[in-house]
Length: 433
Ligand code: SF4
Image (cartoon, rainbow, N blue to C red; front, side, top):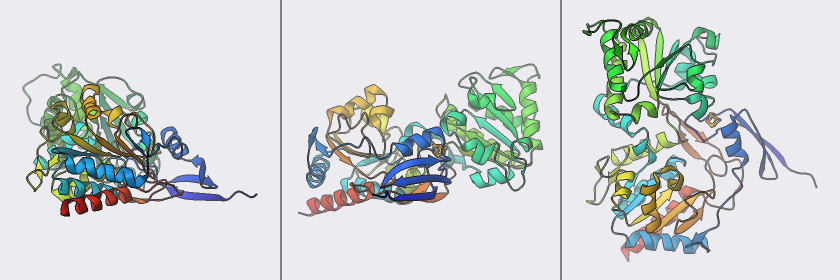
């Protein structure tokens, strides 16, 4: 019998914040058989998207979808302090449902940005951030600074599609017409492929950004050129400041080496003010190297529905924002949460072990396309159709540009959005009767 071959072009890989949208996927008889143009990580994710799916279970025992949803509703409506957590690897449509569920439960809702790029979001609330799109970077940037990030290993195609060797409108020669600088505490593949690697001592991001503000503005700094700031001579920082002032269009991509080292949000605040002041001399922007596919969308959805990007509590009937108090790690470390609905993240793999352990002692409802460390102990496991493979929807790229991800195969399971809608409807029904 002839097999049915379908070739899908311009498929979006939803694994990392690059959201590469030029992937080609061949599907034979509803099975993904070939993936072209993706990096090794994206290719593996797509090739294995249809395998290793969990069963629908309650306490490890197979059950029906209806029974699993009823049990989920029972757990959530009987909890005194439930947590709704995740959002980062699903569509904005599903994220919207999660926020609504958190609101009707008077629950707390958080996403993984509270322990990755959350400090950058808090900095934006204080001082804003001059930012741009990846398309502008590709077409215009002649100076790219990677600060505390290693995209050659974390966002593999970032350099070829957007920031380094991409050929743009004003840079038809790609790599040859760009200067690449890396600031990091240790050599990485990205620092090795840069024109200039500035190796700094750990925990000094705030000092470096402060010094660069003074040097870019030609203000006196009260130190000689031989003095060391973050282990690097002032003369070198002066050289970097001159390079920044001399470029036509520059951008800083900052990673967890900036947001999660000593200083956290004030590091990003100082970096954002630096970028803003550089614009007195030339065009300059900054962008966070967002990790999971739609973690940026999670912040967008939470902000447009609650006013805040993360760590929101509804227990008083209106949204209250307080990172630390309402962040997932703090809530679990203090053992305040007595039930959790977790979607599109893997706390068993990502959270610190002693923090995540509290989740094993409370009822957890878990929506997830694949078996992973969390499916091993979650109380209610509901397999879902993977977004971007078996479900369509909207994802936000790291530059906050929304893209529509496609459904390229059929699945036996519902999408996150559909399961969450059913849970929401039954919670509303249970609360009314
Ligand atoms: S760089 Fe990221 S989005 Fe692009 S193919 Fe690789 S994993 Fe997927």
